[in-house]
Image 1 (tube, helix red, strand yellow):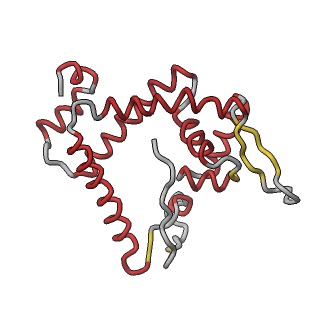
Image 2 (cartoon, rainbow, N blue to C red):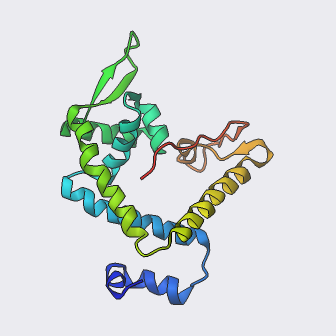
Image 3 (cartoon, rainbow, N blue to C red):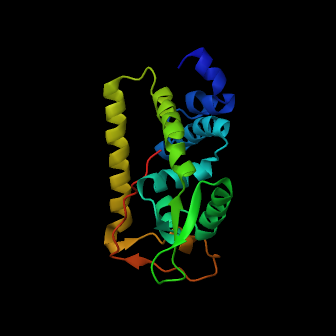
Length: 197
C-alpha cells in the first residue's frame, strides 16, 4: 500500500492489521474491509445527496421494481420499520411511490419514479469506481483468488448453518428481546441475495 493510501486510512486500523494482530481472524478483516467499502461509497453518494441507506433500496428496486415493503425488507436484510422510514423519505425526495396492486387494499408495492430510475445512471458508476479503487494495483489472479475464497467462506458458513436441518432465525426474530422465545426454522432453504454493491 502506498504512503498516500496510508494517509487515507485511520492510523489505528492500519496499526491493528500490520503490527498489533497481523494474523487476526478473517472475519475481522472482512468486517473492516466492508466498512472501508461502505465509507468510500458514502463519500461519493453524499455528493449526489443520496444516503447509503437509500442506495441499498434503490439497487434492489432497479433490479426488481414493484416489490412490497416486506419483500424489499427481506431483500435488503433489514427490519420492516427501517424499510418504512427509508421509503417514506425516498417518497418525499421523489424517488419512489407506493401503489396498490389489484383488489388487495393492504398490499402496497414500491415503484421507482422516473427520478428514481434516473439515479441509476449517476450512482452505479460511483460503486464501480469504489470497487476499482479497492483493487487498484492488485493482480487479476489475486482478485480471482479472493473471490473464490470469499465465495467458499459464504458457502461453508451456509452449510454450517444448515447442519442438522436448522438455520439461524431471521433478523426480525433475532431483534426480539432476549426474554422472548426464539423460533428455529428447520429445513427452510437459505435465500441467496441478488443484490451487490
